[in-house]
Image (cartoon, rainbow, N blue to C red; front, side, top):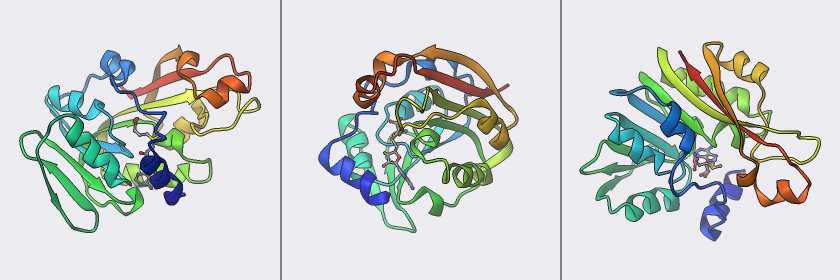
Length: 207
Ligand SMILES: C[S@@+](CC[C@H](N)C(=O)[O-])C[C@H]1O[C@@H](n2cnc3c(N)ncnc32)[C@H](O)[C@@H]1O
């Protein structure tokens, strides 16, 4: 599974990437002055936006290609250092990316989480482990902001996988469904080719 993601980065097959960032993050995010965990962050510019809102941002990503691209594309100077995971620390911004397997990432006390494209990137048998590991990194009263997609998986298969309300409430009972927007125009081409005509992007948030 790791090899498949690393290969996508090597070949530039990163169709999930939103170069202008996520519109629903900007519309619904309310937590500022936090230390925000961004699991499986890719090179999303959402990390810059979150930092600009007064947060410290810590991303975790398998691919060093993604981390380097994030810093280079935004003209950010960084220091790279080896540890259990390879660390990329911005010199002038409060952003750090850790490169390696998220399940090996250890830290504690994050008081916010931003997930877009992480939970839904994982198959059903891996998602409980992801949720459990994420919870172990978060303070008990952490603000959580999770974006999922919902569509008919009988028509086509993920990733991104459709993750419904009961599954989310199983992992994180404090999350509320605050928005569901039809996002079929941004669905992967394979979904459109299979005939899918509705895909909701759903925003889950604590409080
Ligand atoms: C669908 S992309 C989403 C990236 C980003 N969140 C975004 O919205 O653009 C999923 C990302 O998770 C990364 N990834 C997959 N498995 C991982 C793991 N075990 N540890 C860390 N990153 C992982 C992949 O390399 C990929 O960049």
